[in-house]
Amino acid sequence: MGIHRKRNKSLGLAELIAIALGGMVGGGIFTILGISVSLIGNLTPIAIVLGGLIASLAAYSYVKLGLYYRDEGATYSFFKKTYAGSHFSASAIGWFIIFGYISTLALYAYTFSSYAISSTEVATNVWVRKAIAIGVITVFTLINVWSVNGMGKIEDLMVYTKLVVLTIISVILMQHGTTDFGTFIDQMGADAEKASYFTILIVASLTFVAYEGFQLVINAVNEMSQPEKNIPRAIYTAIGLAILIYVVIALGALFAIPTQDIIQNKEYALAAGAGNILGNLGTNLVILGALLATSSAISGTVFGSSRQMAVVAHDGYFPRWLSQRTSSNTPRNAIITMAGLASLLIVIGGLELILEFGSITFLLVSLLMALANYKIRAKTQSSTLLTILSIVGLSIGGVLILYYEFTNKWEQMVFIIFLYAVLAIGAWWFSTKKEKAKAGNHS
Image (cartoon, rainbow, N blue to C red; front, side, top):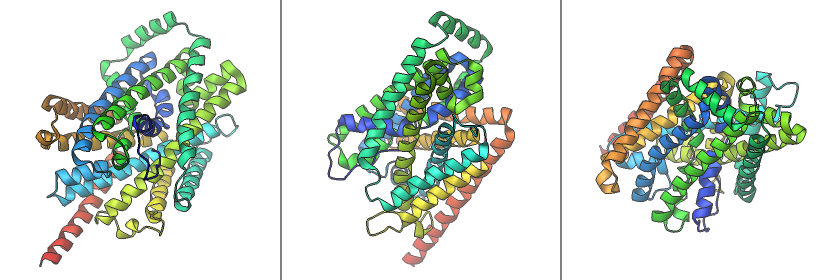
């Protein structure tokens, strides 16, 4: 989820905001819309704002650690440096962050395929959808393996175009929708009586995955001017703009599309609704916006996360062959492995499983960042109150998603817990190997 930049470029505030928005506005919002409306109806925009506030709390520790360490390795490097004595801590954060990226890669590809076939006869065929999702991952994998510069300027164009297209469509839907403002507010009141605060908070926690990507700004710390000013400004501005864009998209859908249609069509509801109001032009515009959004996110995720995987492997916490690079410094093995694992997740998991695994993983990783920041809060000059607040908020978010899973789809929760157990065992195995190797070198 991000934008590849040449090293010699000095990035200013506007470009850093674009990097963060390019990462955040991917497939998450489209996927969340249907699930959110099915749970809390017209209260969806409130949950989106709350999800953004949770993301802001998470961003606080990222900003503070980013300014203190000034390391483009971001999440993995921050945790490894803060808990320098623990091999298992470094290994675990490496495993969790990489598999979090794998789940978002699967989520974006799944959403891409849903929109790509949304106006065809096979729109509801889950295996066609999965096949196209794996196909689009393969395409961007090949681009990343063979093209040294990734997609460069094309991706810049995709980021800005998708934001413009999605905003225009959402505003048109609000203006031409079948629902007027008074009816919308009345329905919101009715939904508030049915939905509990608890459910709203669960949806807000699920929404967190739609804000994943703001930390990409920190990956560019060596290429930006005035990091002490631009890191916090870029991250908080991007989260604010993402909240605004998501709320406008949600309002556009809720004003124009019957609730049942949003729930039924889930991740491609916006295209169906635009088609009803604006005909084929509306449908095609939304499909274009969604394909641009997911394409730029898939390309950037493959690019950025494969390099992070190579770094973790170089440190000995993944198999060493994943750290190998080509003569053009491309981590080919890591790129292919990321794509393969994301494809496997698409085959074995449904959309909701992928979404919830991604949400829990990034809540967990953000919580670990908040704990790391709390440990060295004097060095990072962080507010104790805000750091504790972020720890509490992120902990509650994680617990709420697990509760939702347990009460609604306990088999899915068991599978997610099983995945975490496998990741923890893998992290432990490689950390003990590293400790033994270190002990052998000393002796």
